Length: 238
Image (cartoon, rainbow, N blue to C red):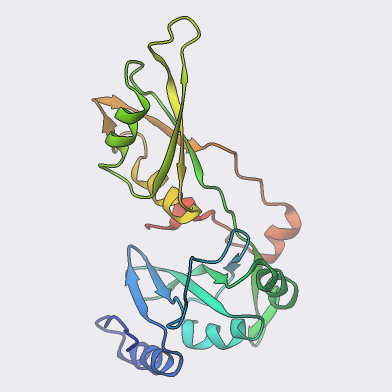
């Protein structure tokens, strides 16, 4: 049976979300500053492949899943919708929709970017950032790949590999940095947020953390379509 997490003070919204969940069979749960709708109740197998997700922006703060789901269902099967939420229960004006395939995501961008959700209110739909690798600097040079992976696993989830390079002058030591690969972009973004300098120390060392592959700048055309384009790495736990 589909679940909807009750949020005090939002009874009207809760009632609409419950009706949506009962109709579709999807769960709707809020955690860590975001509310998730999905995955489909009959979904079998792994999550959709890379390229299946879009970023949605310029959302009215009181526009919720009961309005958005019917719009995005027109272009494909929604695997998961994530709306970024503030403490008042309103959205932060943006979120993400993951479809069952990259083809459906491309269709959403083509057909729903600049879609009028309310009179004179147009949403932005663009390709989502999908980086899964972080750069971690400031590591003790005596630590091994196994040491680093075990230490990071105390703080974050979803690590699938740690890439470590030996010092040129002393092969028994590393170069003081590593690349850490995660299962998906969401887990990498959560890790980046948790490991901000000054927040977490590894072996009493303050570390540096950033994307291993720099995020592409958003061009002016995209910015004109999506006024509040924030990379997921900054907002996923806000």
